[in-house]
Structures are given as structure tokens and as C-alpha cells.
Image 1: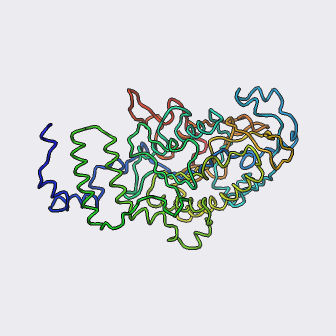
Image 2: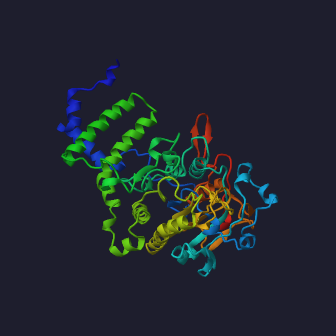
Image 3: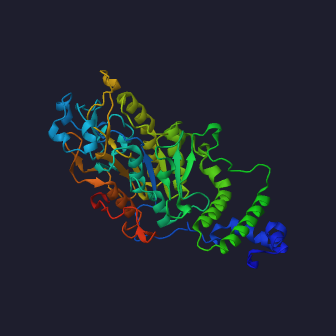
Length: 471
């Protein structure tokens, strides 16, 4: 064995807290800027409009013609069979999924100076109509949940690729030394495709999203965050010794990014013991603010998202709930009423809160799911309209954005009279990603990572910035 792998008893004692080595190690942990952190803040390719992203993920696929894409023309066709000429324009896998046209049972009205049309399901969000940029011509690739989620998050429906949050963190670093730079807030369980939605894939592990179960039983969102019975000074010295041992181990294995990630995670976990306890404790907020968001899982999540954003977290993703709550194949009317009621007030509170704090101008808020729904009935053998649903749809659905350098009070793109195809200005998921990266200050074609002999990027070989929506 190489003698360089050994160290003296004196060195070990020093690192364990019996000499100047422990002091140095303690100082190093107390002062993260002294470390060569892969998450140190970095400048983007050009001046950015947005410094951070809050992604409101309505997992399951919200119905566009019941929320932000009114289709009055469907009223004339309500109850009629979809013409074959329209069916034949759909993806082959969707032709057997569509049948009888079902006009939206919800009323739309105009709001704000812009006159943006929004469903009655979102009365509070509608008050912020002039902040919203509604893209009605979104397109994805596969009308199923797991590939749809991976497409929207990672830019590919099948192959393992880094998520957009990981790319943002890789490009910008984080402004927070004591919190993860990429946080995923999830109440009540995991979404479809689970942790692959926030994976760093072949990017170093430090860029992986940190999943927080915000509705955990017993109230412990981050297990084992603190250690009982161990004084801070003792723990600091223990971590100093561990870092010393890891560093020696690393020196014998240069280029092992997995080890770098583990070392960084350990040090971050130590610093999180105080920072995370504060960041996730919404009881520190004034009662007026807590009431505005609402004491619900979605409300608490969005308030936490704002607290994380103002503490320098770069990318925050808030899922609506476990599984795919917006996947309304049946009982759409009662379910979408409940889902929108759960999210309408908190989303409006988030937009207002960010605006009042002067954060909305450099915080990009994104709302949407992995797909939309068909404008036809999925009856599931029921005659009662309250039990009807809508099926998956990827060729013409809705995503909206606010703040962070996008124009407010506008719509972009449109679907056809049946809300089943894009009639103008299609926006593929790759285009959405290219635009989001542009707002963060990146040329999506130049934000790359060398892996397996080629330069990879979030948008692969696709994507164009939607310049018309930029402020």
C-alpha cells in the first residue's frame, strides 16, 4: 500500500479537536466561502431578467379549456361527435381517445386592463391578469404521465437527462450558502416518475434537486436535520475530521465527482441545521401573510417557496400533490373545482407577495402541468355529466408565466376551434425551456456539459426563444 495513504497519530488528533487543525477545520465549515464550492454564484452569458424560478407544477395535466383557454365555439358543437377530419389530424395514439365534444361548464370573463379571459375557477388569480403571460399553444410529445413529466422537467420523455432546475443551478450557482440551491416542495408523497423529475443525471450530484416532504407525518419535513445530545462545537470538530479524511481519500482518487458531491452535501447539511429550520418555519410570518396564502398544503408550500426565494434558492418547484391530482379522467367538474379552489388563493397570494416585496421583477413564476386535456368527453360509462372526465392531450395546452422579464396581460398562440390542435404560434417544450434559460441569462445552445464524448444541453438540438413574450 502506498505510504501516502497513511497519516500520523498527531494529524488524527489534530483533526479530532486536539490542536490547531480542529480550529482550521471548524473555521472552514463556519466560512463556506473558504471552500471551493461548485455552487458558488456565477455570471450567466448575458444580463438576466430573472434571478430565480418558482415553478408551480399542476401534475396530472390541467384542462386548458376550463381554465385559461376559452373556447366559446365549442358551445355550438356541444354533444356532437368529433368529425373524422379532425380526428385524423391528431396523433395516432389519441384518435381513439376522442369522441363527443364537451364544451366547458365554466364561465369565462375578462379581467384587468388587458381584458385577459380567465375562468371562474380562478377568481383570485384573475385579479393579477395584467401580470400573466398565457401561452395557449404548448406542445409536448407523448400523452402519458411519466414521459410527459420527464419531458417538461428534463427535456426528454425517455432517456435520463438533467432537469431544468439542475441546469439552472449548474449555470448560475446559488446565492444561498446554507440552503440547497434547488428545492422541490411536495405535499403528501411523490409525483409520477418520482425523483427522476429533479435529477441531475450526468451533471455532478451537487446540482440534484432536494426533495422536501412538506406534509410529513409528525411534522418533520427534513429527517435527522438536528442531532440531539451532541454539542455544536463537538459536531463541528467531528465534521472537520470527516472532511479531512474525505479530502485525503479524494486526493488518492482525483476526478471523482461523486465524492465531491458527498463532501459538499455533508457540509451543507451541517449549515442547514439552523438555516433550514428558519426557512421552513412559516410561523415566523405575520398572521396577515399566512392568512393570505391559506392554511392548506398548497398555501403552506407557496409561502415556503417565497421564503426560500428571498434566501437565495435558485430554483423552487412546487407540486400540487402526490401522484397526478389533475388527471381528471372522471368526475372532472367536482374535482377541478376542488383543485382550483386549493390553488387559486395561494397562487394569487404568491404573486401579490412577490410584487409587494419587489421580487416579482426578477422571479420567474411558471404555472402548468405536463400536458392538457381533450375537449371531448371521457364518459367512463356514466350518463351524469358530474362524472364525466377528459383524457390526456399534448398538441395544444396551456402554460402561463409571470414576472422575471415576461410581458404581462397577454396571450401567445392559439388552439383551433376544437382546442385539439395548435392554430398559430406553436411553442414546444424545448422552446419553453430555451425561453426560461434566456430569462435567466443563458443562450440555451451554449449552456452545455461534456459527457460521454459529446456536449449535452437541456434543449438537445432543438428549441427557440419565444421573443414575442419578452418584456
